[in-house]
Amino acid sequence: MTDRRLMAAVTILATGISAVATSFAIYATSARFVVSSFNHLLLEYLPGWFISAIIQRFGDVALELSLLFSGVVLSVVVGTIAFGGYRVGSRVETPAAPLVGFLVSSGSIAVATAVIVGELVPAVLPALVGGVIVTWFSDAVPAPSDVDAERRAVVTSLSAVAAFNIVAHALGLVRRDQTRRSEQELQEQASRAEVDHLLSTSEDAELDADGVQPLVSEVGDFFTVDINPSPPTVDTASWSLSITGDVEDELELGYDDVQTYTTRHEYKAIRCLSDGIESDQLDAAVWTGCRLGDLLAEAEPNGEYAMVTGADDYYYSIPLEQLEESMLAYGMNGLELPEAHGYPVRILVPDRWGKLQVKWLTEIEIIDDEAGGYWEERGWHGMGPVNAVTKIDRINRPDGRIQLVGHAYAGDRGIETVELSIDGGETWSDATLSDPLPDADTIRQWRFEIDPADTAQDQLEVYARNIDGDGTTQPEERTDPFPDGATGWVHRSIDIS
Ligand SMILES: Nc1nc2c(c(=O)[nH]1)N[C@H]1C(S)=C(S)[C@@H](COP(=O)(O)O)O[C@H]1N2
Ligand SMILES: [Mo]
Image (cartoon, rainbow, N blue to C red; front, side):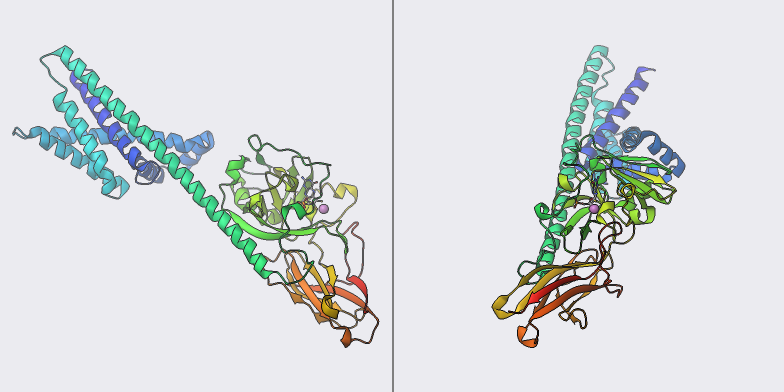
């Protein structure tokens, strides 16, 4: 290469890189950063198969790689435009030729950049910087009479350009970090605000009733069922969730990846299959997470079921359709999911017993057939909808009256009515209910008052039952939790005096 050609190449690169770096320093991650826009255009014109091949081959780094590639290509393009612009402009026969060259080259960079970004303002500074550098290299540097002096001038100029690029780059990186952090903070704030809203909504919906179970249980009061005496300790840094088996694309997601899906917050109760009519293994919370269907869609599953496994090797097979409607939960009542309840993530399957709500989730394997689960191996059934239940939490006696309070649950069908009978089930009256919450798959509180003056009896045989959102009345027959889950109406004999 001749000296002239080498000089042209150096000028083109120095100019292009500096103009692009200026854009990076100012606009970092936004679409006004000319490389972002250029990359976007490039991806639009490249064939889809090519892009997916690259993404499959390089995974997460594909985006960084394509940005780098776009940056290099664009630097050469902008540098060449600037160089050509300068050559044309400075050809005029006037002493102001360098100025004309500067104007034409800056103008060309500005037009090219504005076309790519779709806006003029973000093109101005990169164009000025590019114009200055191309002018400097074309005019000030060459002093053909003295080779040594020319070398020195080139080295000095290149050092200045390098220093400028380092500073511009650092600025861009700082900006990018700031934007990312503020975006994340904004998202976290919005998420917290949404949970706070749900928590206050449920507080407002509560009945005024002493001793009633709250619509959202405190984390410390929420029951736990664990096959081991203590929960497995999971380190989020090494934790991952893999989606394997009969899928088009196996997925392995880290803790941060899981949080990138659209966040949802919902009320949901969990009831253990071993919960009796009189026991206390039914609690509700506000859960934060994402829709499992969003993750599964990326894996493109082919089977009908999924084998879902936790870090403690607890496992359940769940129909894919239900799993898609499930939540992958990583937050509870606005807190990080507590260790006892499945940290870092658990699933929440709508309308199903607690045993399917696998905690400390590590793997989802897509399979073709139903394959039971941990408690099925031990004789339990109950893979279908959770049974309806009505609980009596307390009997209060405010100034001579009798007040019964409790809560009811009927899975995703929701609670429509709670009825009480004080005559052994002959006649029924509606209880007062807490306001409905936006999600059905949770508990509702009820309150019922009896005026002793209204009855001639000394002793009342009280029964409570619910009617779910489908209009089904809770069945009367009392059965034990083993093996299908408890059924029946809760009963109390109450002395009037
Ligand atoms: N990994 C794992 N998940 C699990 C269990 C378990 O022992 N290990 N117990 C299940 C049972 S039987 C119930 S009732 C619910 C209870 O959830 P909780 O402890 O958050 O109330 O978790 C389910 N998920
Ligand atoms: Mo359970």
